[in-house]
Each structure stands twice: as C-alpha cells, then as structure tokens.
Length: 126
Image (cartoon, rainbow, N blue to C red; front, side, top):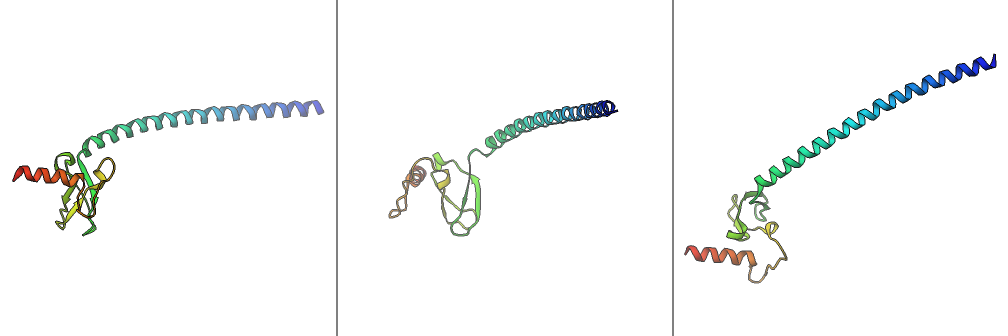
C-alpha cells in the first residue's frame, strides 16, 4: 500500500514539475521577446536622437536674466559671438551655455572672447 502512495506522489510530483518546466519555458520565451523589443526600441530611439541632434544644430537656449524667459533661437556663435539680444525684452543676453572651453569673462570690461568676436563682426559692417 505504501508503495502505491509513493508511486502516486512521485507521478504527481513529476506532472507538477513538467507543468512548471513548461511554464518556465513560456516565460523565458516572453522574456526573450521583450528583450528583442527593447533592443528594437533602443535602436529606434538612437535614430530619433540623431535626427533631433541634426535638426537642433545651430540653435541655442538661454534664460534672459532681465525678463526671466527661456529663449531658443538660431545662432552661429563662431560668426556672431556669444552675445545676443533677447527676442522678448531686447536686453543683452550672454550665450554662455554655447561657449566652449574656459570662461574668460571680464566683469570690469563686460567682455569675453565671444563679445570680442561680436565687436569684430560689427566693425566689418560699419
């Protein structure tokens, strides 16, 4: 009698194990598919980021210290320097975020390498 009980328990346990193994295989397939989806989405995101970087090249965003508005506009820093006028209030904005390298702003003369470029450009037009 005890042998039959053990045999029944053994068969029952094997069936449970088989069901669990099948469930585990199914979940592993789901995980693999989710990983493939993540890789596809990551590739798509990188392509979108590259496209956005290409579109936003040449644009600068700065907060105007006078009116407090964030301004985004096209600006060629190499040609026009790092000083612009706020489109909202007209006050001078230093485009420090677009500056590359060490800041050489002089508080006494209110100039930096960006303003010197701007002065050269203005002198060309006058």
